[in-house]
Length: 193
Image 1: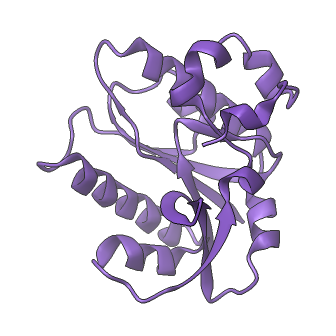
Image 2: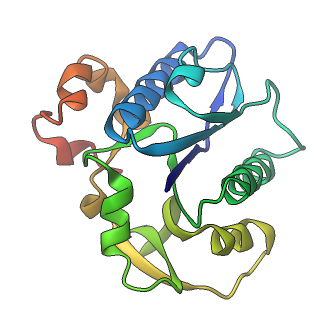
């Protein structure tokens, strides 16, 4: 059983760029992870293909709480709770405005993680970032519930994950949708997070 949670997006009413790239990312995630249960988390205007590309969505129209960071963590915790109640022992969490240039990223992450007692966490130039996490659902819930959890982490580079930052490169990449969907993008590494 595979579960992917896509988070960290706020789509404002007239932000057509963010909405377009998130809709593309959801399509990419759905097509290249067909055996995964996908939970999408965000705030604001809902992507039009949310119901088609995802199995479950938590997407209030307004930011819940008084700060964006708090609201995202709160919604992510809710998504992890859904995953746990549905019986998913492990979960992969990534951003809704990224794609990974790997088919079935869940299986890739599972193969990289060396211990069930750790979480696989993305890192860029020795800096921890939570744009990508993989591991135990219950361990991940601890991260988003406790301020300073004591957890064993295993780092993986963003380049190894082949994580493409659609937000930063959308002006060029929006014309390369077919190439991205078919994993045939020239110089893909230029667009990594």
